[in-house]
Length: 326
Image (cartoon, rainbow, N blue to C red; front, side, top):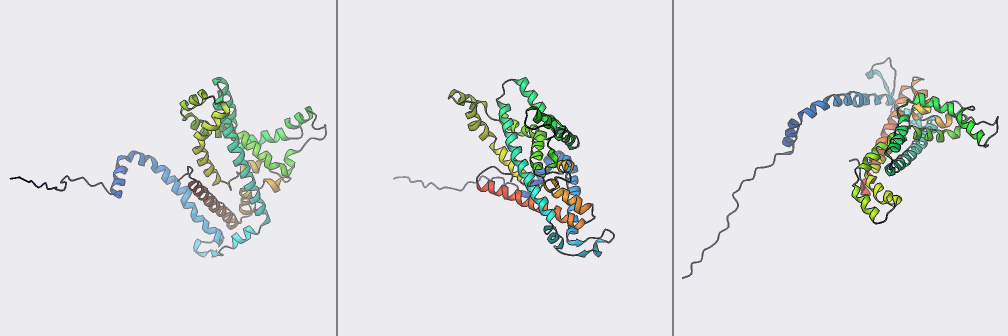
């Protein structure tokens, strides 16, 4: 007689501990990292006081603002200041100059910084490399007031640039150029000045990114017969590509921030049509003439456009499958 035993399967009686909820996990991490949280409190307070509280001042752009009246007594005028802003020829010229100088600075800044980082990475003489890095970094620590004085002295009719042109026979005596008096030359002077001042500083991030590339890749490429140019093109550039894209996205968000000090210090009545940007427009036609609503409208326009450009560039990078900010 066969003894058939029925095998019964019983469900597992092991009880697994439920994972804590999202809010509970958040507070658990907050307690475990309480020292870091306490260290960040002063920065959060500074950020709130100086970055978020002043946004309340944007209401001035929608008022016929009178400093002597209380907020509740101000007259609201809607978007009239924005309409008058975009009907101003001087603002449209300032907007053109801002976009042009920002574009020049963006292109030249990236090309020169990446190129210098690639070249410095190929230098084998450590002493020479350090000298080049130091010389290229130093102008960044010079204030624009001093830098503008140097540039004005060099570009003066009796300056170094005109003397060199005469020495090479490119101009005759008495035909010296007044470089800062040629309005259409200002964008080029601004671009060259910005590169001279910031190219060394901008290479720091790229050199740090290059140092994280695995040296074995260079050794393998060299064994396969790849020269320096091919190693730069197929190893170094792809290795720092994420850094380039992230910095490009961040800089696109600052396209309406072409600066203030170089344009203010190097600008004059002869080149004002090419040197005046939005910041100088706000100073001259807003603050100095006590037209606070117009100045606020211009600043609000810059912020909103910068916000849109930043998110658009980040979204495009995401759609293309590239690295992005968020």
